[in-house]
Image (tube, rainbow, N blue to C red):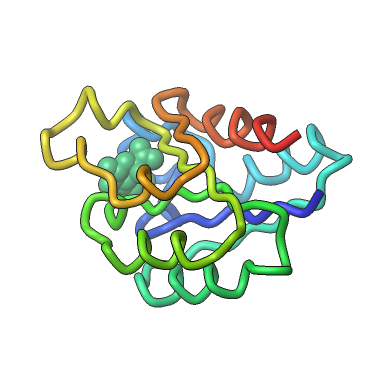
Length: 137
Ligand code: CA2
């Protein structure tokens, strides 16, 4: 099982700012924990602040990964292009969010990812990623 964790804009700041919402651990540290916990899974991690990069990664995932764990961050709520890219590939995508977006501002309640995703996991902090990986096993 080969899975890509794909993070969108500003998630490179995890662990450095707004710890009350997003926690105090950097994603790279958390990724090391994930690799240890899921030693039977080939895990890859990419992050980009650019919408087109995320579209390209989703396109390239076909025949490369068995699935994508995607946190498109703010693009979740704005990006028709990312939603279309997910629809265009057969790679299953599980959408994750660290925070419970439905408990936040109304503009975070819409997702262009969800209608095209295999499933959605949100609100469990970084554990959302772990639950998403488990959903593929
Ligand atoms: O809860 C999530 O995982 C989000 O995808 C995070 C996005 C937000 O726009 C979505 O509505 C929900 C924001 C990511 C920003 O990450 C930061 C991390 C540390 C410091 C500042 C921003």
